[in-house]
Length: 183
Image 1 (cartoon, rainbow, N blue to C red):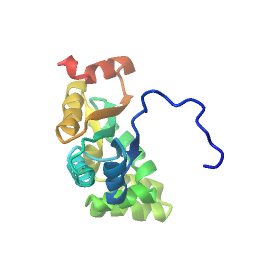
Image 2 (cartoon, rainbow, N blue to C red; image 1 turned 60 degrees about the horizontal axis):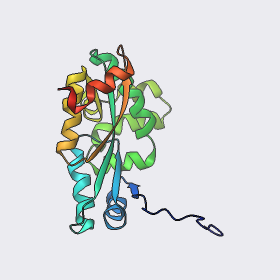
Image 3 (cartoon, rainbow, N blue to C red; image 1 turned 90 degrees about the vertical axis):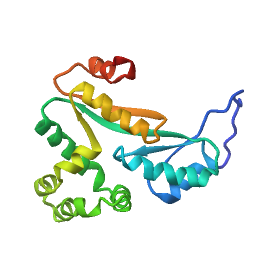
Image 4 (tube, rainbow, N blue to C red; image 1 turned 180 degrees about the horizontal axis):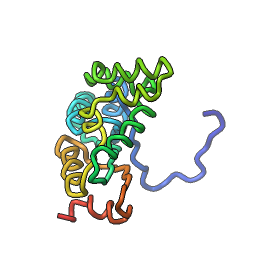
């Protein structure tokens, strides 16, 4: 940046978190930032990403933030329909496609990518297996969603950032129900 000058330096510098998907950015987050922000991954994928951050952090503690998509809805078919639309909107972007290839999800998503590239939007939605939706989008009754979000934390997320989509439940009730103190 040319010409930028901070007029007042804060007494306490804010932490810097780096959004990161694959090894290069995860390593940069581990070396240079206070933490990494993860997005569009399963609870099990967290371990893979955290290992890359930790490898570069050389023992220095790092926060791991994860944006977790949560659909509080007891109708699994409806939740998966919404989840498929979300997945096609993001995972057809090349950076996210490469991320999921790196995670090993490429074969499961190849049909979606092929249909999307051919202009077949309905085919792209239909090509996403239920298992992929279930891995990437937390859904179900609020207590099941809370337990699933906890799996992210158990696998290394230090700051869960749920993106809550309430279906048939008030947003405030969904958020309150997801809180660990709701047990």
